[in-house]
Each structure stands twice: as structure tokens, then as C-alpha cells.
Image (cartoon, rainbow over all chains, first blue to last red; front, side):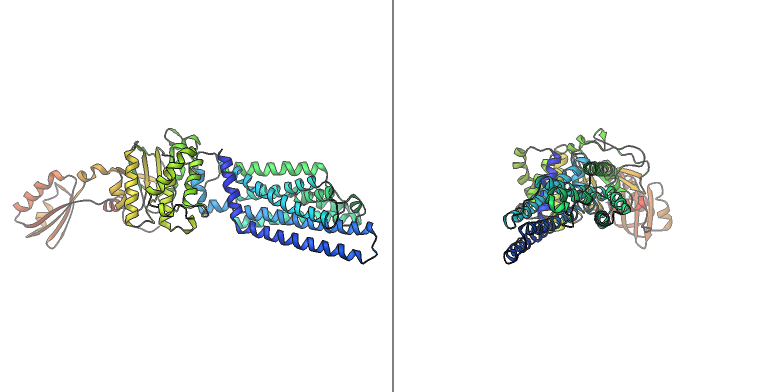
Length: 276
Length: 285
């Protein structure tokens, strides 16, 4: 019961933070710009001789860029809104009145985690749903396996959230933010290096990508999500930057799942042990 | 903390005193399971301090109470009541009653971000009482309050004792402790120095201020059998005794040595004076 109460209050807290609404406003702005851009592209195609097959692949690539933007927004928003929920409340002393209530510390942490999970789910569903719908209604592009893609991007957010919670039980808000954003940057770089390996067949770049994915699997999850959502033809023709040159395996997705559970378990353990 | 061992009787108001850095807040945090002792164990109400269930019977007002500032006073109490396991039906009556008790009824629907420090302490006290706990820890509950607020807190603390609750009070305001607590413990550098029962303190320690002429050093030296300290300054003699019973003997002695007494005023030793005499003067931190 206490866990659900904490989840509810955390969800309400997150919903009252300016950063969430800023992210939503930015997201709505993105959807507007993306929709208008897509519309203009469709209009421009009418006055050109670009064959329908190529038109579709271009619009499909535009949709993938839009989905990638949403993916970045979702992960960064999840990290920034949750970065001070543990460390900030420890430093301010807000946690004292909560941690002395009849609920175990792990329940406090899991409750907060669930609140942010709910918020991330709402954000991902609205933003990805909006982007996919615009791609279909304006550009006529059908997203392959949209549910799989949405679930994978949601998983990516939860991985970032769990890592943020884990470091939040050790470090101050600022340090925690620097560490998590640093890890996301590392994963981003590793993922793109691995993607570039397709042009040179360089196994060393693949190795960098795999190692960085093991350290932080966020980008690997995105690339799997892109593989699931992108038009098979565009992907196999390497028509877009998200082409399936080096698709993370399902084993990597399973690893990401274990990774988030371990991060969460460490967060619960350390939060339960540390002095407040 | 070293060798901290406390016994607090049920139904009393217990004061916890010590200079800055003595370990008062740390001790409370250990008793509440917020901080783990490096060695030894802490028990509260017969259960280990980290026992989750025992917290249903404990209320706590932290020093510098802070909470989600976007909540209203009513929402805050409802949340704490639910976290403490109070049924929603009971909260419907209890929340407005407590808000009224701490004098915040006109501000019941105001967000905490608009509250002053004193108002936050009032609502913090209310959240500590929301589940009618058996044991209440109050860490500096009156530090941000005006005199009326302090009086209100004092009355609430006494009312809690009257309903059978035990109150563990940590405060720097010795005058508040003095008129509120039944017993006090003095700690210094993490160790208990001594304890006093304030209900009998008046009978234990008496200071006497005497205004008289013809006071001689020999006369003052002759007070040694009854006094623990003496100080002669012109025509004013200040002395302390361990019992009011010896006051007639002192008067007889002064008169017998030829002193002309104009004023003889027994005073109770204030807790502040007792504190200084036990802890010594401030030697810096």
C-alpha cells in the first residue's frame, strides 16, 4: 500500500515540475514542426518526378528521424526529472519524514521509481504515438511493429531511470546527472561507431559498440527499436542512418532487462543501508 | 555517540539537552533508524529501531521540517495519515481537527510553498500527531515559532502526555524545556553526562541572593556547612545550597555574625544555569 502511495505522490510531483511540462511543450512543438515538415515534403513531391517508391523511402527516413528525436527527448526527460528525487530529498531532509513512516526503505524507492515509470510511459506513448500517427496520416508511412518499437523505447527510458536512481543513492544531484548523461553519451557514441562499421566492415568499431552497450545499453535498445519500426526495404538498402547495419540481438535486449533490474536492486540495497 | 544508554518512562516529557555537536539529532536519527550505529543496537518501544511496524506507534517532527511544497496543508496531512496506516474515514475528521489544533485552519488549502518557517513547523507537528502515536520525537519543535506559537506547542505537548503518549523533546530553548519537561538528560560529546528530574529540581538546587550590611569574609566562610558556593560583592552575597531546608540556618548564621539583612531571596536555579554548570562555559566548537 505504501509503495502505491509513494508512486502516486511521485507521479503528481513529477507532473508538477516545470521540466516535465517544458518537455511536453517542446514535444508538442516537435510534433507540430515534424507534421508541417512532413506535409511540405508531401506537397513538394507532387511537383517533382520522384518515383513513388523513392518518395516512400524518403518519407520513411523522415519518420525515423522523428522517432529518434522523440527517443532522445524521452530518455533525457526521464533522467532530468528523476535526477534529484533521491539525492535531493536526502540532502534537503525531506526524506526524514517519509523514511520514518511504517514502510520499508525499498518501498519508498520502488514507489518513487513506479511514479516515474508511469510518467515515462505516458510521455513515450503520447510522443511516439503522435509521431507514428503523423507519419501515417500525413506521409502515408506505415511503421513496422510500432508496439515493439514503443515498448523498446520505453525500456530504454526505464534503464536510464534505474541507473539514475542507483547513482542517486550514492551521489549528489549534480554528480548523478553528470554521471548518467555521461553514460548516455558514451552509449550514443559507441552505438554510432558500431553503425559506422557497416561502411568499412571494421570489427574494432563493432567491439567498441558492444562494450559501450554493455556499459550502458540505451543506444543498443534504440537501434533495436529502429530495426523493428523502420521500413524493411529502407533498412536493408541502408537508405537511412538507422539502417540495419548492426542490429543488436535479442540477447542484448535481454541483457538490458537484466541490467535495469540489477541497477534497481543495487539502488534498493544501498538506499536501505545508507544513513539518511 | 559513545555508551549512549537512555531510559525514558512512558507518559513523560523527556528533554534531551547538549551543546552544538553533542549528538542530539544523531541520537534521534539512530532511534528512528535513519542512521545506523557503528556498534551497538537501538531499541524503541521494545523493538529494534529499524523495525517497520513499530513506526506505526512513533511520530517524528524533524528539525527544519521540509516536504513537497506543492502540497496543501490538508493534502500533506492526508498523505502522512495514509502512509501511517490511518483509515481514510478517520482522516476525514482527524485532518481538519489537527489543522485547527495547530492554528492553521485559515491556511488549510494553501500550498506549503507559501508557508513561513513557523507555519511549516506547525504543520510538521500536526503530521507527527496524525496517527496518535505512543511515542513522539520532536527535534527543535519551537525554534521558528513566535511566543504564541511556542505556547501552543507547549500546550499540545502536555496534551499528548495527558493522553498517555511519551514525548522525546530535543531543543536548544532551555526555558521551553524547563517549563515543559518532566525529566532531562544532558549529553556532551556523545556521552550522557547526567540527568535531572525537573519535577524535583526546585527542591534540589536553590540559589539565595542576600542584600545586607556588615557582611565580613569570616561570616561568608562560616556558611560552608550549608552552601555549595558563595560570592560576596560589596553588600550583595550570592550563595547556592542543595536544599531549602537549610535556609533558616543560614539566616540565623548571618544574624549571629552581626549582618544587617535587608533582603533574603531564595531563587530556583534556572535550567540554563544548571546547563552551564554541567557543561562548562562555551569553549568553541
